[in-house]
Image 1 (cartoon, helix red, strand yellow):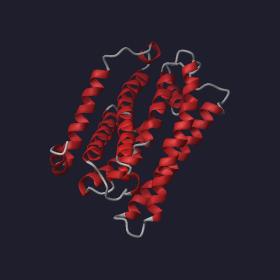
Image 2 (cartoon, one colour):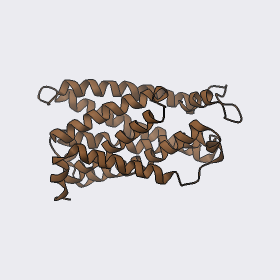
Image 3 (cartoon, one colour):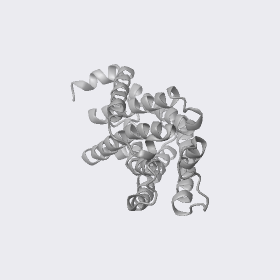
Length: 258
């Protein structure tokens, strides 16, 4: 790993591209796995299932990776500005590659208009992560930001269960509480800590203004999504968005947006 680090640091853009291609290969391999019948019968659900399958792999990998790095190197939490290790640098390369691949998948498959929120999120993440990779600053901050991927596991599982029409299953019921718990612990708390760190150290941080604005936009998006999540899972509307056969594309997209 020590020998690999100079190569990664000297060619961060190429490293991200290679990681992006690896996730694209994973995307192709995951398509060979069987999918629920409800997913097969709808074009949008089929694309979304494939997209989420790759996202689930990324979340399981990077969420676990980020937590492990902090356990082994606790200085990561306190020295967000300059501290990093070879494994943490590699993690940011890998994660950036995923976001590039996912943004490309959304755009090239014609789903950009309906997924503009994800593209906005991805653009901000990619820009911040690339800044960290090229300047070798804020690597620890980017790693801490990946704590949210622990919650993304339950978020992706929630949506995949909805895609498969398993909203009435015990798994969906259990997952919605696990999702709520991880959302508060790993997503809201992570955002709060990073925002606090930037505000508290704003006077001397490199490009602190840009990161502060980026964090505030992300905070707004996360709070809005949290509201939508609570409304959908704990205070649902009486009228369903999707018919019994789930074949209407517009209704399906609206249904899955909650």
